[in-house]
Length: 389
Ligand SMILES: NC(=O)c1ccc[n+]([C@@H]2O[C@H](COP(=O)([O-])OP(=O)(O)OC[C@H]3O[C@@H](n4cnc5c(N)ncnc54)[C@H](O)[C@@H]3O)[C@@H](O)[C@H]2O)c1
Image (cartoon, rainbow, N blue to C red; front, side):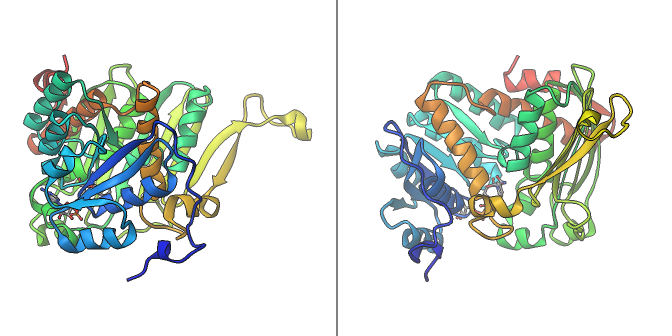
């Protein structure tokens, strides 16, 4: 079977020159992990792929056809023993992340772990303790933060264009029957609060800072019931940050999508100086801007703001989606991987790191508990149980 990469001249992007101190990566779990291998091989400067690991021989063979020069194994420990693997990148089912991270730390490797970092309080405590004992570093692959409109939205926020965020509104809505057929563990071994809602909850935490309490309600959809989903697959969440700012998150994983009306992931920020919206998949970034009446002679009201729509879908489709208009996560995965690689090479901090990831886990767990038992849940006791305070 051939792939895009077997046909000369069809590489969607030109690989950047490798940094002299670039670090080798071993990828664990070769479905989303295959996307990561491509991202590393074609878009990263500070990291490069050296190995792949999966129990599934067909998935391994497909990667071998695409990237024949790498080392492949079904034995994680064998991959971790290799001196050319400096970073382990983990893309196994959610409930296995904790043990795979801990084994990598103990083998002396730094770690990229896809979201959710962990999906249990025990896992959170053990991973945090292992990180502290070994001194190894970790980056959570919160892919949405690294998608073009979200990068631009953040840069504008850091330039002060939004001011203080008083209300953040985020959602991730995606019909998931196909996912249960592909990955039955998604119905039985985790909860949508960790799987899907991890994206909007991370975005709220990113902008609002530490969260004090949450109030959530949830429901299992008819589609979720048909696949015997263990928890709920519809969530509505209100959060109050320590700063006093407010946030709202929504997730629905058993519905009929209407992507023309509403992109599957969106983050709306309402700040003291302006407002903005970032969208996934359509790669749009919509924001307020100073409406300078002097430029046109127009008689705008003092302080009036214009609206700007920036659309990067066609400009960004080669890098983000491998030349499809919508597709897999190549660009976002490359962006967070290279961010981490650069942080390692230059001894700089990265975000979200291990502690931030554990804090976001506590937010997700608070949402799960609030929806399960009703009422609001404070984060402080969970943070303490996880070992953060
Ligand atoms: N936007 C994102 O960042 C994003 C998107 C989708 C999925 N994910 C996350 O990525 C992870 C994987 O999701 P997926 O859709 O690729 O799942 P998947 O079920 O398609 O793939 C998981 C792979 O891990 C392999 N595996 C399981 N246990 C293993 C072991 N002990 N040793 C070696 N291989 C093992 C399986 O054989 C399988 O190929 C999940 O945690 C999911 O939440 C992240």
